[in-house]
Image (cartoon, rainbow, N blue to C red):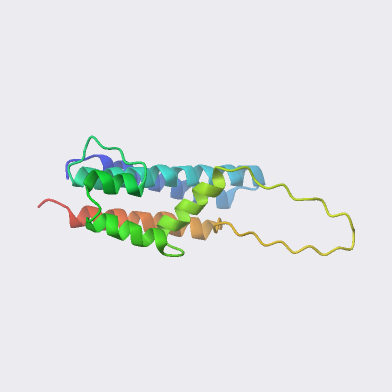
Length: 158
């Protein structure tokens, strides 16, 4: 495969993983959060680059699909990769779904918590967002890299 997109995608995934590793070492919450948000942004870039890899494989080199639907439109919805990514988008806990949830959460302002008015009140909070734990973020990056390598190997020219 003569395209530079697989290498570019690997680079973005490596940088995201590096930021997640650095977040573990940060003493200050702000620095940890900056590393996590930077890593999530790189996961988004990696996912866009992965779509570009697939478009290139199917000779749609002028296309820069921004979504799974755009990829399906540019290369045809019956391709193996489109089917696989659609399945992953519906599978709870998949790297695709995790990335989607992380991006959705990161692109909205955080909800402000109302102050408790009673000192003795016990408040229980449950957050319904994606898993932002560093091991989960590393697993998401690793899952995307595994998928990239599988696609590249599948279409590798001998």
